[in-house]
Image (cartoon, rainbow, N blue to C red; front, side, top):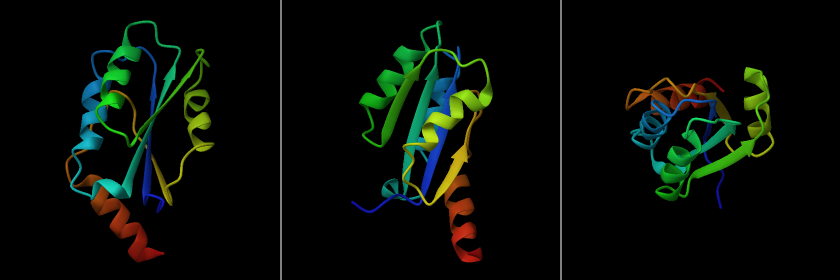
Length: 115
């Protein structure tokens, strides 16, 4: 299988009200689906974020879920994803942020053109 162009990493800690929308903002990108993978790291959430993440992952095979005890630091939630990313580029998206529909395509195509 060809590696994706970009791996999007979403670290999650107690973001039940936002994480589903963040994940869907990646799933709804204009870039071709095979060019993107999504790694969601549940950093010990206790508010039901894990259920939202599981529901989104069940709907899209491009989503990999990592579950771990709370690390207490932003890097502690991001770094485990770096062990499994396959993309040429890595983009970190916070669990309460959204991407506009053409964002990844524009960023990835620009990065490839500038290589």
